[in-house]
Amino acid sequence: MTRRLVAGVDCSTQSTKVLVCDAETGEIVRSGTAKHPDATEVEPAVWWRALLAASDGGLLDGVVAISVGGQQHGMVCLDADGTPVRPALLWNDTRSAAAAKDLVAELGGAEAWAGAVGLVPVASFTITKLRWLATAEPERADAVEAVVLPHDWVTHQLRADRTLDGLTTDRGDASGTGYWSPTTGEYRDDLLRLAFGRRVAVPRVAAPNEVVGQTFGGALLGPGTGDNMAAALGLGLGPGDVVVSLGTSGTVFGVAERPVTDATGTVAGFADATGRFLPLVCTLNAARVLDSVAAMLGVEVPHLDQLALRAEPGSGGLTLLPYLDGERTPNLPDARGLIAGLSRSNATPENLARAAVEGMLCGLADGLDAIRQQGLELGRVLLIGGAAVSPAVRAIAPALFDVPVVVADPAEYVAVGAARQAAWALDGGPQPPAWPVAGTPVAARPTTAVRGTYAGVRDRAGALLGGT
Image (cartoon, rainbow, N blue to C red; front, side, top):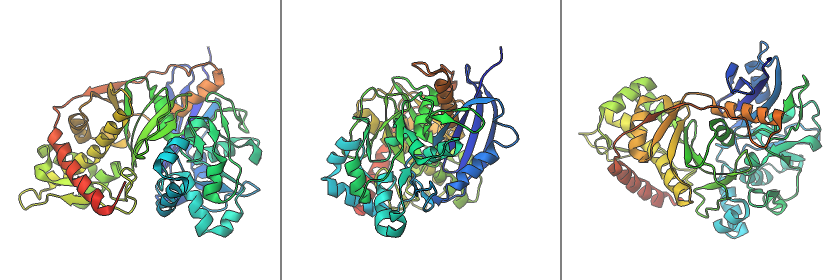
């Protein structure tokens, strides 16, 4: 029997990854990758060139279906010819922080936004970037005919028919814009007008397993989705599963049967890629914290692990608040990192290394608390992402999370989820194909004192900076 091949694309902040998988089993047959520039705005053509480079050499030969998982929230504005009017603003661009505050006030507060679209605007979300564009670059704004997300744009570039009226998205990625409601499944044109001053075209929201077109080579196109939704699909999340992902950003998310509304803005009430919902907490700073502290100590990250594991829990009283590039949760876009409790006795490389790991993980443990408060069951945490391979992270995370932790076997789960969606679209069945996921349980004795100290530093810093 000839096996069918499907492909999943992960167009992330840092790179494009492509996996070719067996449609029935999920076995990875071949893969490719290409880097993106380290920036908070980028020409969308960079993603297309990266996709071509990652799939060079016949990587996609024999592929019969393909889907794209993309970084959420990025703003890609197109003119009447479908050409981007400016570089895309990415999720981690914070220049729209003031616009976010204005929009919250204009609709009547955070509770009104949470009820309308399941989230409270912060600088990450597309709707705030549209307001920034309308006020900061009005001439470019006048040229905008359509606004899409990064995965929408890459999917459209793959499509043989590239007319603007053929643009599609999915409910998962649409739920992170700020102008689509997971509760009603409809766009909120009034909020789009509130942000941008007028109505612009937005992609049609496709069904989770819909075929939305064909490539020039004849492969079927799945609808694609946001990166977190694709990761959830790649991991096959079920009730009680909560993911902690340690990439450029840190995310905490699980699947829910009903939409979530959190007026504090801590939990974003996204939709997922299967027809359910994906409550999610996102921190702006995750693996980059370890990279930065390693650089400060003049060591490589593996050496940072060794240093951290030689220090005692609590880092000798040293606490690192990891808001290196500002923060999204809590909403402190202009904040910076903080080292508290420094003394002559604890000023050692070992304590600083452990404080970096503990600080990063404490922010995500706060996210687990917030998810639990929304009614999600926490049966186990699935740990994924680049920093999940760190021995120090594996040793310390179970102690701070106080929930059973399984480190999922290393894989590009966003690309796996996109490939699984492609296989689902190919078959058109009611459920995606069952693909196995392996992992290793890790355990440690809880260290609640560390989180208590971190919370004190976090709350004092938040009060000083006026965050929410």
